[in-house]
Image 1 (tube, one colour):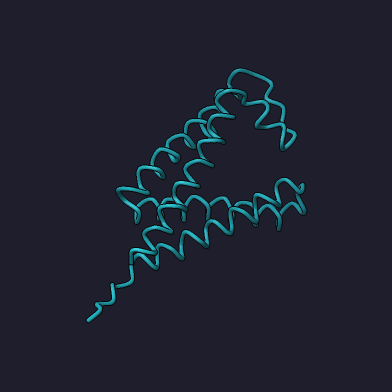
Image 2: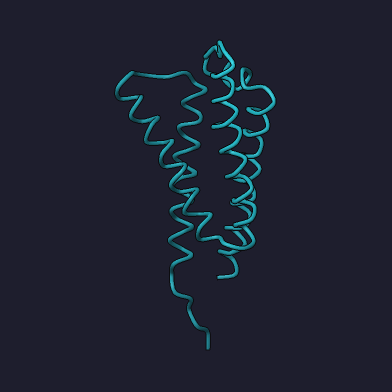
Length: 134
């Protein structure tokens, strides 16, 4: 169980740092964040929305992933699994409904799917009863 705790800690810290990176970029320069998907933010409300969702929400997730790595791994893994699964679902639905997106979006679709699967797997490992050694 100690090994799985260490793996979970490392994964959650990496996720936290990744969310933090996205948050900082979106807060500092929301247009640069949207340039990756060729969306022009034409007004203050659009920039505010990107700062709040990509910036603020990812900042909250970053803080909780890092906290969870040390204090509440099951909850942090559950949030990660749900968050990444939601993103992956949206990407796959869009692929089916709209067609092939850019390579940037495909990269994120693969990454989010992997992170969702990894989070679900680690969560399942955390729920397994410990084996008692004699």
